[in-house]
Image 1 (cartoon, rainbow, N blue to C red):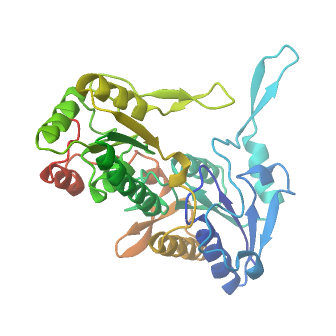
Image 2: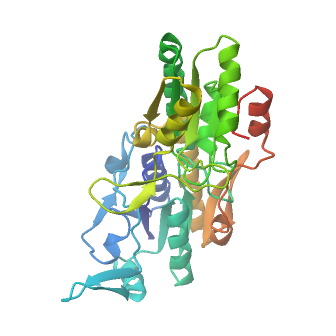
Length: 359
């Protein structure tokens, strides 16, 4: 009998429970046992942080958002921060302890589900002798080596619905709304949702924007009798020659991307005099039930990961290469960030529809 571990790391994304269910059922079909590692890789250091996954544990979970295993953002299992008596912090290398923890759990292989950070951790685990298969998850869709990551299309669906709801209120009050969407360094969500929801302006990290061009576009629309507009901005959008917009997390001093909607809205108001409002969707984009597309991709990824284990293929990530699911080396998956190509068809479509990209 094989004993398979599965972990879900990084930010949550719709479809995680579908992957867990697929890995569990596909493994049980082969006579294997499945162990869920709770909240990342804590089980490597505390063997009580596990959950045995059997049929009842995953029954009725395909459509559920979140993850029944929990997750941790920014968790790094190879280092331990130890505070000294004088208040200083010493970082200890606990790589060997993590590897020993894997074997202590009696695991024969690990399915690591996550985004770019999780795949980098998976690669390091593989390099230290742990048989691992990665499953790509991120609403940002910025992992190389796969056509799409599960969670992305659900995020686009949520964002599209929200943008569409703003059209009527913007028109009723002759206002401009600036909608901030997730997308730190890749503008996939903003681009897809903005085009689908008929936004008038879309700002993404890949195309630094000129605020004067944006305002000229909005005022040209004003002269045509269209006194309202919706501007969509990825949180990582930045002006030509400028930097990202940073904010501080509540309850901490760590800076994170955010606030670009307020920045753009203020500049639009100053230059046009138009009444401008902002909406930030934030974590609404990653919460709730996955749409059928993401459920199906997640189930296919989970089953494919088990097949890779059965074939003894490790150090790989399952990926969508339409119409099939295949495996690519983890090195390829983390070799670069998959940003929106400037020659992408959707970019060309946006331009042909008259949408301003801030150029």
